[in-house]
Amino acid sequence: MSRIELKTHDQVHYMRRAGLIVADIHRALREAAMPGITTRELDVVSADTIAAHGATSNFLGYMGYPATVCISVNDTIVHGIPDDRVLVAGDIVSFDCGAYIEADGRQWHGDAAFTMIIGGDDAAPLRRQQLNAITEESMWAALAGLASARRVSAVGEAVEEVVDDHVVSDGWEAGIIEDYTGHGIGTAMHQAPDVLNFRARGISPKLRTGMVLAVEPMLTAGDIETVTMEDGWTTKTVDHSDAAHWEHTIALLENGVSVLTAPDAGAAGLAPYGVTPVVLD
Ligand code: MF3
Ligand code: CO
Image (cartoon, rainbow, N blue to C red):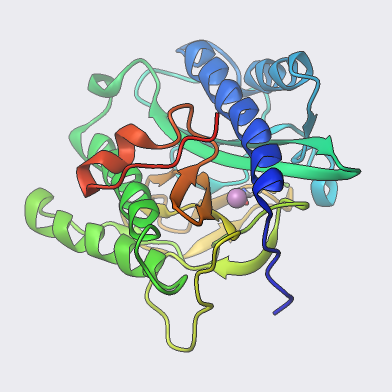
């Protein structure tokens, strides 16, 4: 595995600027996503928001990816390409996007994803609502865990624990996707280390001040087998079960953690775990 890029204080501030732009794309997408809109129209919302900030999409053109956002509907787990599909009430839809800014002659990237139910939570069956809630919770548990953990493997442990807890409270077991992982992020969108969402054998990198990670659990309401469509991107569950995906970019700092892609630096999401984030702005 290639070297992990450790960021200076100034560099984390550059990444916060990118993170706040990503947060604003999410805000715009959330407001615009409603029954009757096409996913292509939502890509325009994303592209316009990035342009309004004078930033650049890190998704558009990435290995040939044709849009500024991945929009993954129902049984699509990740990398759904915006097209003429019309969203309907009750769809469970993930939005994954990012942007970079330039500073000190380099790119500084942000990357985050959220999932929502079109037309409001009540428009979907209970299990779909639960899937989204479990996935979001697993992300916050993992982010909070990084405040005191020793190794990157804490992410997978936290995700598995949340999934296990919900077997008891909800009465069914979410599947944790293993074919896709989170990642380091900084002067490029995807860097070392891989951030696994499940417990795995083998040694995991030690957490260090200056590390910035994209934590992004993907859960399903069924099995974890994935299949990628002919377009080379759209990745679905083989059993056509629903999927959800949440992601934030988090910085490990000397005095704590800061969720760079959350407007409140993660304060609300981390609070249930007794973690108060560092606020950089
Ligand atoms: N979904 C990936 C991530 O969050 C990035 C998407 S790659 C792209 O790490 F090509 F679709 F942009
Ligand atoms: Co990512």
